[in-house]
Amino acid sequence: MTTPPNDAEARRAVQPVICYPVETLPAPDLSLYRAARATAVKVDEVVVQPRDAASFTAKAGQFFRISSIEGPQVGDLNLFNANDLTERFYSGKTRALHRTHITTGDRMWSCHPYLRPMATIIEDTLGWYGMDEFGGSVHDVIGTRCDPYTNNLLSGGQYHYCCHSNLTRALADHADLSLDEAERAVHDVLNVFMCTGFTRDTGQYFMKASPVRPGDYLEMFAEIDVLGVLSACPGGDCSTVHSSDQAACYPLLVEVFAPAEGALGDWASPPVNGYDRSHGR
Ligand SMILES: [Zn+2]
Image (cartoon, rainbow, N blue to C red; front, side, top):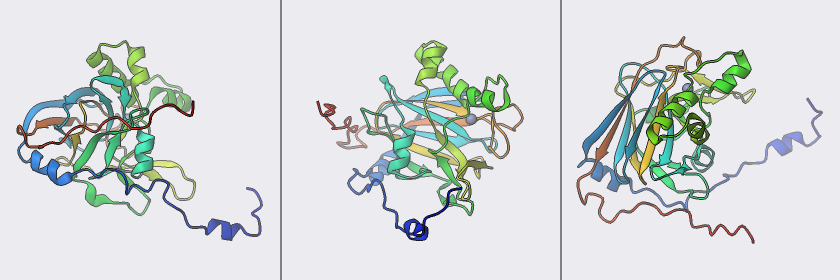
């Protein structure tokens, strides 16, 4: 610990400012999306088995819902442009634009040079949870995904069913990629249903038992054609351990819904970002 200067308290007392005032971001038209959703019918469903991952696609204008079905279970979601796997979810910028944990009205943003909404949350049955006394909240974009490399660093083992590996296998199978190619496309996730935060005293990433119960769901509107890959985390509800076969794990259900023809009016997918990419040259 360094010696604080005489004006340490005054420096600490400076008020923070929001990095990204988002008033100028185009707001999602939730009432339009919900009206379209009321006309929608299910067109696909996928069950993600425990300690494994599965892929699904939703066309622009469709909806996808991730549900807890048999017991409390956390899901790690990767999202790609279904037509271009180089456009993928950007967890860090989503966090900076919205918050550490996302909920209804927030969006999943894509990476550079695209940086546009890929999906918008239209319903979150855990929206009531808010922020608990520990600073914990649900659906985080602060974690990464459990992975066998970190596990190897910390405990020296070879565990093959971390979310990173589950996502790698499922993406390889869907896109006919080698494991190496698929692994390099796997990215930091939206931690669906996971309850996490940073400890107030040491700033360490923590998890606690997810408040999710069977019947809870997170539903999104697909702003572009998306390929989703969802892992049912080996941590189960993430109340104790992950990166092992010790925790109780349950499947997750993904359902895709298509609205009636014309229900979205003249809605169109958002264009890719308007920056000209000349970078000062
Ligand atoms: Zn995991």
